[in-house]
Every structure is written in C-alpha cells, then in structure tokens.
Length: 108
Image (cartoon, one colour):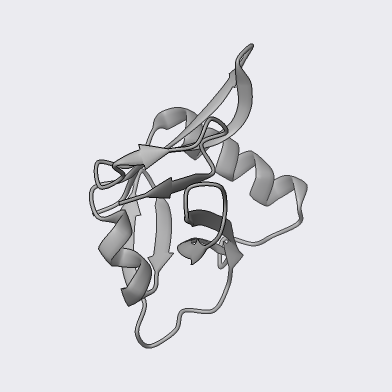
C-alpha cells in the first residue's frame, strides 16, 4: 500500500484545482533510473488508468503505480512539507537504504 498524509492530501487537492485538473486526474507515482542515488521518484497527475496499474486509495486520493515501480514503493508514505528546510513532496520509503540530500532520489 501507498499512503498520503493530511498535508499531502491538501496540497494535491489544491494543485489539482490550480492546474485545472478534474477529479478524474489521479496521482501517478513511479520510479525511474537516475539521480545521485540511482533511482528517482516521479510524481504527476494522470487521467489514464493502464491495465497493469495497481490502484491505491487513501484519504480520497487515488494513487496509480506501475508494477515495476511498486516493488520499490510498497509501504511508502507521501508527505508534503512547506517548512524552512524545504518545500515540496517527500517520500517516506521504508525500502530505501540510502537517500540523497534533496530527497528526490534513493537506492535500495
């Protein structure tokens, strides 16, 4: 399962409205090669649900994950921080053995 915190939920709802997206636009989370630690998170809106997608729902947010990315993301919590030390979405991933300083890339 992939979950979202209350702060992440609020920010996703606000971004969806600001970007003119409808409720048909879900959050797609994936993992791609790259970044300073070897793997990078990719996050965006997507209205298309693909046949191989795994779908999770938490706090009214539907999260789409492809099968390959799911191996790296199981148990992850999506959070949002707007504090002094940085602003943006953060991935709390129990599968990551190392993360970079920016939090956008990781290794297992």
